[in-house]
Length: 263
Image (cartoon, rainbow, N blue to C red; front, side, top):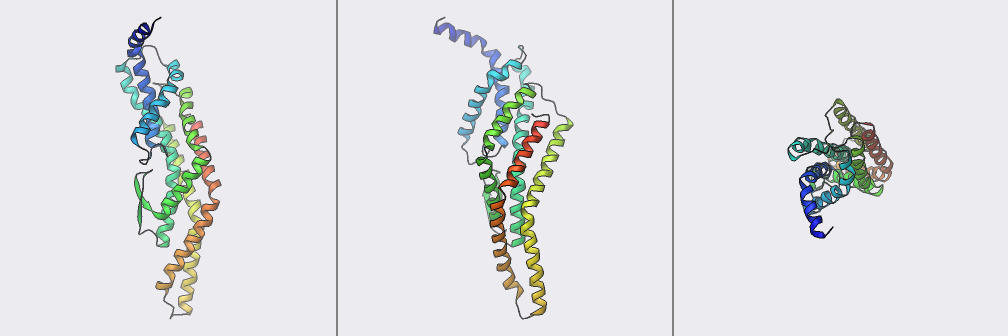
């Protein structure tokens, strides 16, 4: 077969291949829109588009085996939304863990009086406090170090074995999954913020007793720097010891994904 015949054969098969490829591409695109690192505004749009197309090309031969042979463009368009939803849910559930860690830093900053300065988080496309951004970047560093970015892609590939193309259906398991991940994210944030909040509570009680025993002591001028310094010191210890908590939380989310309808 000459090269011209191969080109003609490829053109004749394009109407059959293109709908399936679009379905695969949209599932990958959903992950790239919401997943940590991949969905960050700090990553150029061209890079994300190119990465989505490259992954879709690699996944296409495996995904096409379970697709009906009579898939057309008109029948594939309704299924695009389901394919996009799968990628969005996987990326969103992982992002909720980082939102919980960032919430811990924001609560600590609010209680320690460090919430006046706001910074922009390009990964979540939202404003946060300095401590919230510090906690978030720490969790992101742990995520990359343990290979979470590769596990995300592996999780997406596993969906083609359990949820073939055009077989997605919304069920109660989807809402249960998001609800469980929200509870886990809140628990992670509470675990990381609890030591600092408890220390600030003890410091407030001590300064309250001091103000009763020494009325000449100006608590307003002394208490603010004491609370700030104490919060920063305890945050240093919390961040140094939070690696295991973050890894456990990320692993728990992936495990819930595997046990749910997604994986």
